Every structure is written in C-alpha cells, then in structure tokens.
Amino acid sequence: MSLQFASRNFATPGSDRLSGGISGLQTPSTSNFATQSSHPRLDDLRTHFSQQQGYGGKSQLKNNIERMIQELDQRLRITEEKQRDEERRIAKDLKDIGNRIVQENEQRKKLVDSTQKEIKKMRDGIEVDIRSIASKRERMSKERDLIENRGRERAFRLKTELDKLHSQIENERAQRSNQGQKMMQEYAKIISELKNQLIIEKKDREKVQKEIEREFEQRWIHLKELLIKEKHIREEEEQKILALLESTFESVETQME
Picture: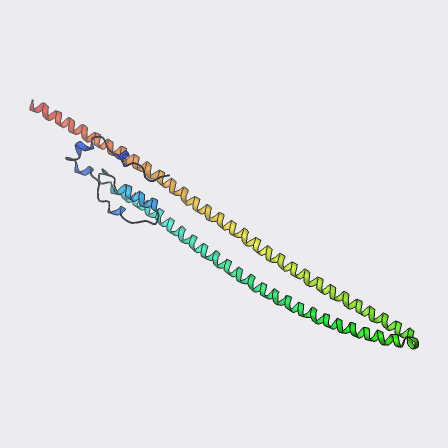
C-alpha cells in the first residue's frame, strides 16, 4: 500500500473565500514532523502531513499522528536490531560448527594415520613370520626323513596360528572401516539438523516481519479514517461559518435597505 496519496483529497470547498478573514483555519507549525525516521515509508508519511493545509489548530490529532509514527519507527528499529543480532549469532554458530568439523577431521586423519602405521607394523611382522615359517619349513623338509611326524605337526600348528592371525587382522580392519562409516553418518546427521534449524529460524523471522507489516497496515487504515473524520468535521465547521456569514450579510443588507 503506497503512502503517496494525493493531498487534494483534503481540500475544503469555500476555503479560498475564508482564507483572508478566518485565520484560525490555517495549518499550524509542522516542526513535529521534521524528525527523520529509519524507514522510507515513515519519511513519506511525515512529508505528506508537513505539506497539508487547513488543520485549524488540531494539535491533538497532529500529536497523535506523530506518536503513531514514532511508535512504528521504534518497532522497526528494534526488529532490525534483533534481526542483525540473530544473523550475527547464526554466523558465529556456523563458524563454531565449521571449526569443530575441521578439528574432528584432523582427529580422524590422525586416527587413520595411526591405524595405517599399525597395519604396516603388523604386515611387517607377518612378513617376518612368513619368512621364519618358510625357513622352518625348509629346515623341516631336510629333517623330514628323521622327524616326519613331528615336522608335520609343527607345520600344521604354525599354519593354524597364521590363519588365526590373518583372521584377527581382517576383523580389526572391518571394525575400523565400520567406525569410519559411523563417524561420517554422525557428521551428516549434524549437518542435516543444522540445516533444519536454520530453515525454522528463517520462517520465524519471516513470520515476525509479516506481523509487523500487518500491524503497520492496520494503523495506517486507522490513521486514514481519522483524517477523513477530521476532514468532515472541518467541512461542517466551515459550512456553519459560511452560513453564519451569509446570514449576517443578509441581515446587514436588510438593515441597510
């Protein structure tokens, strides 16, 4: 809704004839409307009332209008400051979450590096064990004729231990892989919750803004009704004054005749 409505709607019929003789119908000082507000529409409203003529000393209406404008201006200033504080808080939360994710990524990288070192160490140990086993097998093959039964048992026992060790390594590797996947799922959950929170906060801000605009529109409608009522009252007063003047002129002319 535009604030730029035509000032000619407030012109009073017959005001030109009474402008020279009835000074009480002229517009008083408009210094109360000179304060600059924080919203362009409020400035337009002040400019409009500062240009109007013919209020006839209705200071109470002028003060009510200025007070309504100041209340709207204060509400807009408070809302804008709250929005700026909310934006700064959200930016800080995002920064903290980003720093926490970076730290967790660094910890995860350290864990992966440590795990890889442990796996390498275990592989080196396994290779040493394999070489040792190969050496033992070679030695046992030379002694097979003498200790065939004992060599066969030892080879079976070593193979069993090797299989057990290999199975243990595979289990530990699978567990570490599952832990990494679980960590990534937790990161995705945190990001999703943060996104939903930001969407909810944005809707809340939009709701508050709409409520303020609706209240502004209602106050503006009320203000127009007051102005229309004031215009009718002024027109009635001027008609009464015109009727009184005409009656006085007729009476004077009658007496002169």
